[in-house]
Image (cartoon, rainbow, N blue to C red; front, top):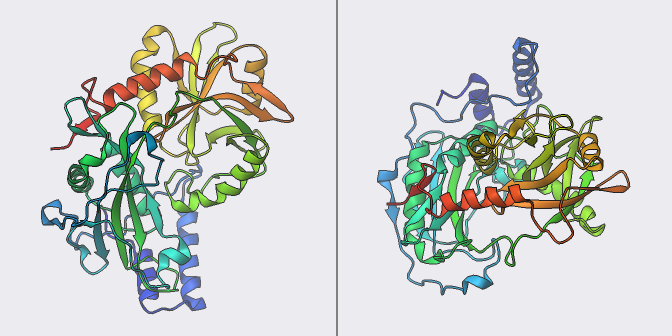
Length: 426
């Protein structure tokens, strides 16, 4: 971590004084303009933000954890009745941070409401970021986390981008492990069931001034979940969306911020009213394919000349969320599909390219990828008044590639295949 920047310190002092004078605004604008002038000619799509944390502050320390167990344990629901995000475990983890002291002592307490002042900055200026990850039980009853280091790295990146404090990844992984182990009874010991974990970081300073928060709260809650598709794969139909944009160059589309999700609900509702399950987000006059709903998008295209299959997804150019499942798919595909003669590519591709491949019978399959479902097969994409077929037969709900990838990842998640990505909670 690096010390907080001069610009951030000025913002903190302005916030502490509840000042929003024009002179402070002009000073900040001048500083911002100077930084822009110093940028190289190559345009990047993502700002490299400094962390709000400082070397002089206390680091997040798992050894200072205190645990208060609930006196009223919740009854367990039948696994088959679980609905995503509706039920929560007995406990939660919380850690406060202040600009003066850094990270305070972490606490595991009974699940409870938060008490925040109406002027708390998260309500007014969206100082909030989060993660989505899961814990699993293997056949021996051991609890496992899947690639938690990737979630920690992404959460730190999101936090730094919106002037929230960063933390020590190994410490938070250890703390999440303790919470998960305490509430392990909520994890059904069955394939396709897991405990969804939601680390969340919010600014908590009481102020209407616009500036870096002087206090924050990191908390983690957990929700037992069942299979995304209770009756097996169910292919979805998408509406190619060009009338609304999910992310743009220089924005925060590559960060997991709550502010990125709310604006997508209206387009999703509009697509649903026309019979489509999700939006396929397009960008620019070229209509580049970016993401599908809240998931990364993958397609399998057969080369026109050679017939070689190519697994394609959009590159991490600052407008694409750096999905943990996305990275896992690319890594496994390079290890297991490339030796079979495949190409695995991160590149820009357009809706026109997909339409042409579909018309020529070269669009083999398409699927979204994310933590909740691992993969979500796509049947058709509505575009320019017609439906682009994505390679599935009427009797199929998934292509072969999506099914293989899900099996590979689940085998690692549930400890059926020993792999460094699967971390056993001690």
